[in-house]
Image: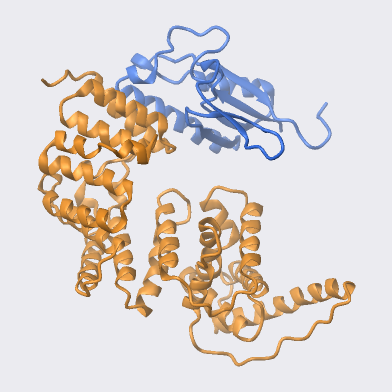
Length: 385
Length: 136
C-alpha cells in the first residue's frame, strides 16, 4: 500500500466532504474511519481510483454517523435537515484545513493532534504512540479540539505564525516518537511553502531540512546523544543541506527577516563547516545578535553565550550569562551552558558541579546520561590554572 | 498473569550495602555499562513478553495538597524528608508469578556500578491490584 499517497489524500477527501456542506467534526471522523478501512484493505486490493474510493467510503460512514446522530436528536425532538448536495470541488483544501486545525483558539497540544490526523492523515493510534499516551486519551483530545472549533468557519483567515509554530513543535517531537514526526512536519511545511511566498514559511522549511540533515549523526549506536562538535559529519545528509541552503538563500533575498530564517542561517553555518573547528562562529554570533533583537527570548541569549564563548573566549561567554538566572531560573540548559563554558575556561570543579545540577534538572534521560558522563569525565581531570 | 511494579530508589532501602556509590563518582565507561545494562533488561523483558513499562523520574519533585476552597494548592518543594523515599523510576512487568517478579528485581539490582561491581540496589516490589476477581 502506498502510505504517502493515502496520507496526502486524507485532507483532500475531508475538504470535499466539508465543501458538500457536512460539518467538519463529523466529516473528519468519517474520513478517519475510511482511512482505517483503507489500511485494512488496500494491501490486498488497491482501488483504481483511491480518492474516489475514500470519498465513497467516508460518505457512507458519514451517513451512518448522521443516522445515529439523528436518532439521538429525534429523542430530543429536534428536526434534522439533510445537508444540501454540493459540487465536488477539485481544489485542494489541504491548506485551508491546516489553518483551521492550527486555530489560535486551540492549545498547542490539541492543534498538533488535530493537524496530524486531519491534515497529516495519521491514525489516532499512530498519533497516540508518537506521544506515548493511550489511544483513548488522544481520541478524546482530538474530539475536544473539534468541539472548540465548532462554529468556526472553514475559511476563517488564520494566523500563519500559529501554523508555523505548530509545525515547528511537530518537527521537534520528531526526535522522540515512533512515527517519524520530523518527516511529517517537513512534508506539511513543504505543502505550505508551495502555496505561500511568506519568507518565514521558507525559513521554517529550511530550518527543518538543515536540522533533519544531521539526524543520523545525532545519536551513537547505543542511542547516546552526540553533541554537534563530536558528530561524524560524513553522516550528514548533504542533499538536504543543499536544499535547505537554497531555500534559505531565496528567503533571505526577500529582505524580510524573521526568527525561523535567522535560526536556519545559524543551522546552515554549522552544516557548512567541514569540521567543528572550522565553524564560522563570528557569523553565527552576528546572527544570534539579530535573533536576540528579534525575539528577546532568554533561551536565545543563552545560546548566544555559547557563540560569545567561541568568539571572545570562555570568560566573555560566562559574562554573557549574567542576568539570565532571573529569566531562566532553574532551567537545566542554563546549568549545561554554564558548565560547558566553565569547562572550556579550565574551571573543572565548578564545571562538574554545574553539569551535575543540569543532569538533575533535565527531563530527558538522554540528556541526563550525557550530562552525567560529562561530569564524570571532569572528575579525572585536574583544574587548569 | 499478575503485574508487578518494581520501584527503583537507587539510594537507601532496608540495609544498604556500601557498593552504593553516587553516579558522579563513576567513570563515563562505568556509567555507560550501567545504562546499557538497563536497556538490556528492557529488551529481554520485551522479548520474553513480560515488559509493560519502564520510566525514569526527575530527581526533584514537590509535595502538593488541596489548599481548601478558593485557595491555591499547597505546594512544598523538596528536599523530601528522606532521600531514600524518592522514587527514581520503575519497571512494570507482567509475569507468571511472584517468584519471577523477585527474580527480575534481583536482576535489576545486579546492574554494574563503580568498578563494574553490582550496585546491590534495593528494589521495592509491589503487585498491581486487578479489576476482576482475585486469582486464588
